[in-house]
Amino acid sequence: QVQLVESGGGLVQPGGSLRLSCAASGSIFSINTMGWYRQAPGKQRELVAGITSGDSTNYADSVKGRFTISRDNAKNSVYLQMNSLKPEDTAVYYCNAAVDYSGSYYYGSFWGQGTQVTVSS
Image 1 (tube, rainbow, N blue to C red):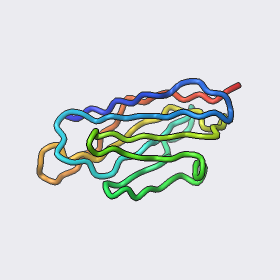
Image 2 (image 1 turned 45 degrees about the vertical axis):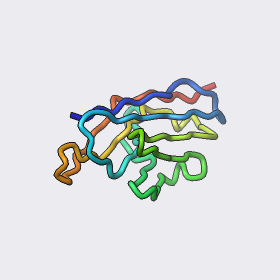
Image 3 (image 1 turned 90 degrees about the vertical axis):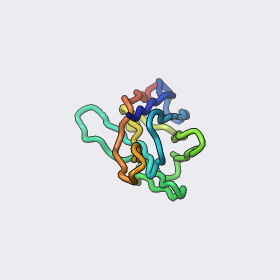
Image 4 (image 1 turned 180 degrees about the vertical axis):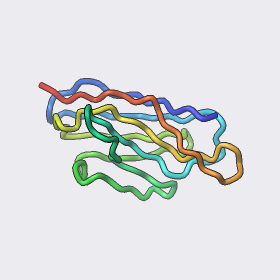
């Protein structure tokens, strides 16, 4: 049906930057909200940032002012620019999208496979 593929994770030193990308493909009529979540070892998955089809954004308090979410509707893609990274940002980052995959205006929730971000010196 719908596949989400993330890229851009890796190892970075504290204070550094990374840019995550996520591209959706498959049976896509439209995409509503897109977002990034993260899950650190031993912790629950949490919302990092979200963006609506109208480009309204929201962020977790812990990343406000450091992370920026954006999307390219023509490419069915969402991005997360992460600056001033801290060790506590270390986690697996997952892309999520609400996708109308049948043309019926029913939006299913789809997840990527996750990409590891490690912030360490």
